[in-house]
Image (cartoon, rainbow, N blue to C red; front, side, top):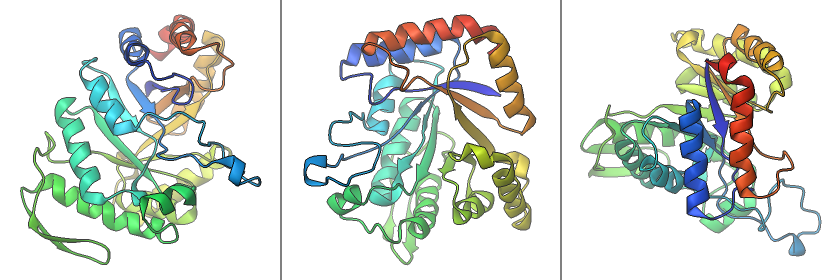
Length: 288
């Protein structure tokens, strides 16, 4: 099982040196990957007194693909994973191009996690349809994979038309792993049918949801073991706790685990780097 760390998007700040040192510290300590959340726009709660979303206009978010492109030059081994990029609120060919560039500049270290999102404010501002976002994402994945695999593509679908055109550069292996996030029944079926991996955000139902993903995979002629699974956990305080936590996920077949450095009450961006080092000192041997 690979052990990564969640990039503290809303708390790390906007100093590029601190952002760079967080990633390089994670790599030097031994974390296998850096996982980043995504939001393009935050709602102004002053005009929405009944707002219940977890993020607002005051929440800082580095754009994941820009962030990964920047960090590709600051690291050599650290894998980058979006969990998740809200794909249906973006233009498909543009995401395919951006992801391919990150893949090339990082020498193949990108895992593209995508999801449908929950924030209609972003969809409206970006000019995309919030209501059909889930089903539309399937065609988006197909389009991206075609664009990554072939120099030119002719495609005519329900939402996309490509008139014999292509992107360049192409990914190093002519493909990029596409992981899905979410726990709705349609998402679980989609993961089993077409995804390279899954981010299950509904942890209490993990075992049951995994069974549904595996059933969908077998129903469509796929080996469930080929579908990666990544869970996100809070830091364990001791090696013993970490060992028990890691083993419980491994026993379920989880392939990746990311430790979240968010919402720990840390005082300032620099404190996140110190906390990262302290955590690895406590559990790094277990993770190895």
